[in-house]
Amino acid sequence: MTKIAIIGATTWGTTLSIVFGNAGYEINLLTRSKKEASIIDTERENTKLLPGFKLPSNVNISYSPKQCLEHADMLVFAVPSRHVRTNARIISEYINSSTIITTASKGLESHSGKRISEVINEEFKDIKLENPVCALSGPNLALEIASGNPALSVLACPKIETAQKGQSMINSSKFRVYSNSDIIGVELGGALKNIIAIGSGICDGLDFGVNAKAAFIARGLSEIARLGVSAGADPITFSGLAGMGDLIATCSSKLSRNHTVGVLLSKGNSLDEISSSMNHVAEGIDTTKAAWFLSKKFNVEMPITEGIHSILFNNKPIAEAINELMERSPQLEHWV
Image: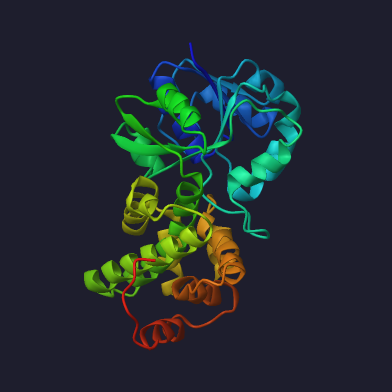
């Protein structure tokens, strides 16, 4: 039986444990503490982050990295991006070289702009991994997937054979997985869409209507692709599940944390107020910092990211940021 270790009893980590468990795999879900493991194991559900969804009997709850990772065929990081480096460092001594390492964290390291697979590679540099690190991404709202609704995702790896091997491990009738060799595009698509979702939430909060929101999403996708291509991604990737697919889902759903951040900003809430009121991490906040840094590094024009960055971190009034976007000099429409 395929054995999958999931790092992080987050909403997404818990959801993946349910999906993979229902597919018949042996799952080890690693928690932050003995207390958290005891509560989840006793209740057989994550009552704090995903209440009402019972864990299958083949999902084992553990707070021991050694126990969780022993004989694992695949390891999935499902913690917020800001915590990946620390978690990777903690578990590094227990990694098996044959295990397929996968990140399901959709963000960038805020201070460096590095993709999460790059962060993991740095922390596992002394391990002779048999396979490159993979990335799982797509239009995957956790609550819908936990409810059993059909969903699609893409598993990317520079070595396509590894992506296909991982794909065969986690593909199921409810969670269809495609493979891709463009890990740069898949990771950047999954991360950068969160910035656009914040802006989309602002559009909805201000009742700008469908025209404005559709245009905003379209221009956001172009902006994502521009940075992605400059970083070495295939532009076609951004028309797929990890690009357009994830962008549409995150910009359109009230289940999206980043969309919620945008709505709350439009109502006059400060970033501190929003962050303190949320039980979950909105990846788009840290990702905006990282993307702003990358736009300067690659000399890529990213007006939407610039505007969201100014709203979040420079206290720029939303109306002023919108006016600056709308009053930019006329441009030719380019995909990238």
